[in-house]
Picture 1 (cartoon, protein in one colour):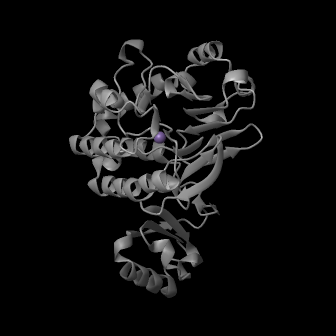
Picture 2: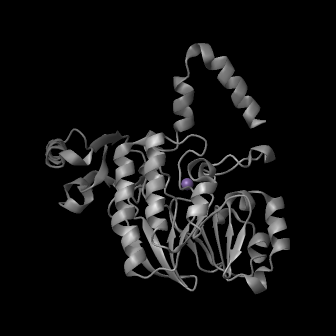
Picture 3: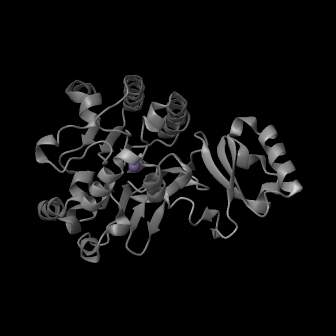
Length: 336
Ligand SMILES: [Mn+2]
C-alpha cells in the first residue's frame, strides 16, 4: 500500500486571504495531484484541519476548496479525511454534527465520490489502518471505548489521527502496542522513533511560529515514510538575526516573510542601517520587516526568548479602561 500523507492545511487562513488560498491551491495542483499520479499512490490521507474555522467558511474559499477536493477525488484514488479540531469538534454531544465537512460536502458529494470518506463522528478501520478523528483522541472515555472496540495488537498496523502525541501519557502509548501513529494537529514536526509516534507537521508554514522550518507531505509504503516532498510553493517565514543579515543568500528572501532581528546596540551602527536599506530595496516583494530587540534578549537558534511569549501582557496593557474590571473578573474566573 502506497500512501500520500498530508498534514494540516487550514484552508481559509489569514481571514480568508485569497493570496494564501491561491498559494495553497497551486501547491495542490502542481505538487500534490502531480505526485498522486507520478508516484502511483493508492491512498491519500489527510490528517485533519483541512479548514481553518469549522463553523463559518467563506463562500469563495469553500467553493474553491470543494473544486479542489473534486479534482483530487477525480484521480479515482482512495481518499480519507480525518477530522481535526478546526473541522469538527464539540464537547457537547448535541452539536457534534456541526462540522465543516458536512457544511461543505454533504451526502450528495459522498454519493458522487464513493472513493472519499470523511472520518468525523466514528473511527474507521480499513486495510489495517485505524483512522481516529480528533474527537476520539481528545476524550479519554472515547479513547478507552476505541480500545474496547478494536483489537489494536492483531488488527491494526498503523494509526492516523489528529492529536498532540507529545502529551500522550505512558499507559496510553502502551495500549497501542508500538504500532506507528501518524498525526496532524501540531504544526511542527515531532518524531519519537522510540515510541513510534510521529507528528508530521502542517503542510504549510502559516505564521512566525513556523519560522525557519520547512514543511513536507509524505509518501509512505506499508506505513513507513519513504519520501518527504518539500513545500516550496507557499511562502516561508524567515528570521535572520544580527550579523547574519550580511550573508548574501537570495534563497532566504525568495517567497518569504522576513524578520530582520537587530539588537538595540547594533541598530545605530552605520553598516547595519545601510544593509537594512539595501535589503528592503533589493527584496521589495519579500515583506522584509525590521525588529529591534533589547540586547539582553536571549537569542537561541533564531528563536528569541521573550518576544513571542508576552501576548498575555500585551492584551492586559491594551484593555480599554472601562472594560478592565470585567477583564480581571473573567480572568480570575478562568483561573479558578
Ligand atoms: Mn491545526
